[in-house]
Image 1: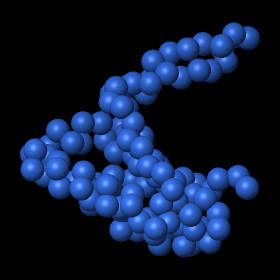
Image 2: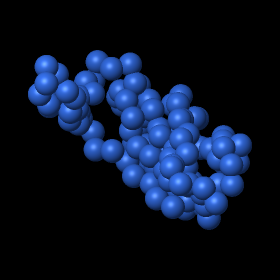
Image 3: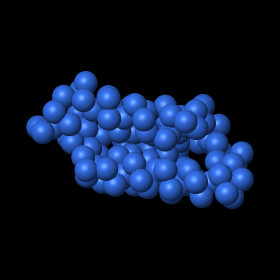
Amino acid sequence: MSQFLIMLYQKPGWTDRLSPDEMQKALEKYTAWAQRPYGIDAKRLAPGPGRVIQPEGGQLRVTDGPYTEAKEVMGGFYLIEAASYEEAVQRAMDHPHLEYGGKVEIRKLWE
């Protein structure tokens, strides 16, 4: 079996439109999805910007980012097992993130 990283992208502040009850239900859906037999790991990223390191003029530059002005941000990830890209895609098709208008990117890990 191969391992695939499922990255969750969404517009910043998307949870602000959910009531506390809706947020609780969403968290339950995400948690249940993470507990499927093919799931290996899942993590939600902390709110706020991270840090970006990039070369600039022969030096490494560290900046805050991504910014809340971004059109979308990565909010978390799941690591799953699947026999192929096709199977990984099929497994991700019912991820609750898609119910909330988010985007899911799937990448195979190097073997």
